Length: 216
Image 1 (cartoon, rainbow, N blue to C red):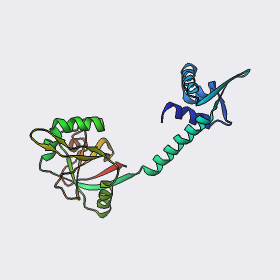
Image 2: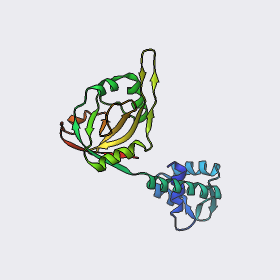
Image 3: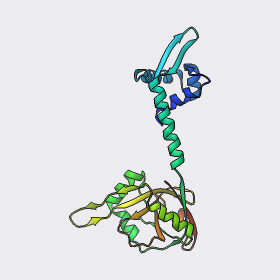
Image 4: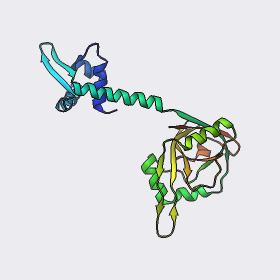
């Protein structure tokens, strides 16, 4: 939520349609100087109206400001309704070492850094799903909104596209589920990446159960 939405929301929580600058500064835990600068910006954008009275400065929303507030609250409601966590449980298993090669390629390293904000540890954690609910959630996840790292072609090879879902594993973040579009893995196997060496970070080994949560 931007500053305009924050201030509009605070104003909307006032007992009436108006609020003083002093009260607003206290609500936002900011200095009156900082609030004054922000109010000037909002006034210039015709989002608020400021009136000087004998009791001080009174701030109220304009029609444009009320529309902005309504839009912000609608976005918040939609985000709350649409955001949910898909939980997938599975058993740690060893892979073939392809993940280490895959994650060591500069194109993928740079792409994960760009889209996820972290450089993955060179290797994926392979998880085998063995219960029906988790497998259903994995199939649902495949159709959900995701980050797409596009296919990349150079002179010698084609690097396949990857679907990425930000996640946590046993409560550890950041992490992500990756679905290489050219993968030969069955639906019952998923790969997780993280900046951490997850086996060491989580003190896990082959056969241990883990729980992944993907926020979609």
